[in-house]
Length: 202
Image: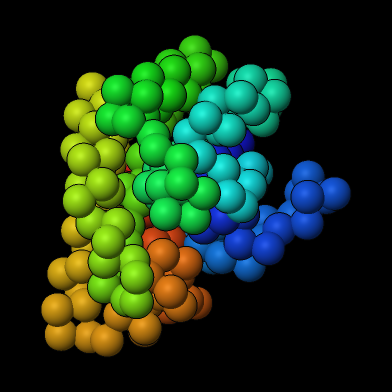
């Protein structure tokens, strides 16, 4: 069973782009390690195809090469935060219609392989200037939830989960800057994902 992770820097997490087998140091590596321990008799192969800085436009441009060509059994998709971030870092606006179009086409390409799709919700926590992301991220996450409800085997609501946790816990426990997760944050993502994946692997 091949499980492929597709996304931006949160998925990338320092992986060596010259080594197709490298999983990086983040939630992908943690999830792979835990799943191997949980299912030692399963033939599990893990592929990380995260690229830092990618928006949905860039993911769409490489989905054929990085996902469809791999013919995975399961795809984990975590994307969308850079479509918000580019508004502030580059002065480039991604409209809700553009976002929906990109995301739907990415999902359609993934589903064309016959793979089961697991969608992780992009997140932003209340740290520094990331609070200004909130109204735009809310809009994009509504679109993601709508598409995931129709197309995905499971939806992992990490924005809701993290923002619930940080009502009583300092957000810096889970993220370095409001977006990129700490090791503890990566463990949370991995654990929430594994709960969704278990019945499909077992």
